[in-house]
Figure 1 (cartoon, rainbow, N blue to C red):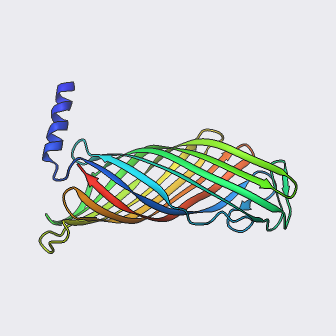
Figure 2 (cartoon, rainbow, N blue to C red):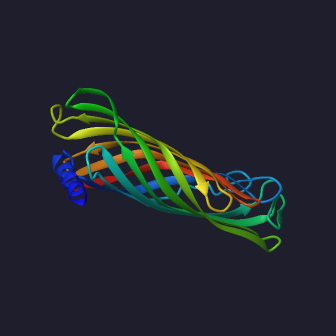
Figure 3 (cartoon, rainbow, N blue to C red):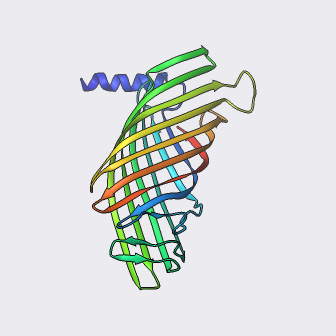
Length: 259
């Protein structure tokens, strides 16, 4: 049995037109939006306080195609932001009251580690050897670590939350590949890909998540490519009276190395 699996893996790697492994790296430029709540009234992270400045963070993904039509992916990112100002409106956050004009300082961090698998099972369009449209169902797990802290400098009070949730997620990926070698010497191919994931959160009191990714890959050679795209990651996570209903969105630019 093990011998048969090894033979299948080796043949799959040998017959692949592309190198079986890929590292995608670059800068994600997200901004934080949404609300946090722990008491009376949700605190908007863009109006009541302002933590919506655009940040630049490294984002790394590793993918492996062990056999034809199967892709395994691993991704990681670590985001953090902080700010200060005067509170707008009035809210209760945990044991702390925030009144209009109170001086505040706050911070939020979101860390993530994810693993997923995709199966390129649906290929409704293949005009020739130069253009292919593929749909792939996706399933995976993703861990989110979220830390929030809000301090009322006027009353010298503060409330912090540190939580972790695991998402069981599924979705669909669409990819269009166009082999451009017969049209130009500058590029080997152009790929347009989009991915939608929806999941259920476990840990604490659970919740839900969804994410959207879309981008374009410019393949300069068999081993080197550039990538430009957009990413949206939303969480609606709960822990007792505390709710983190917020997410990250922004452009992503980087490169790919295949080997």
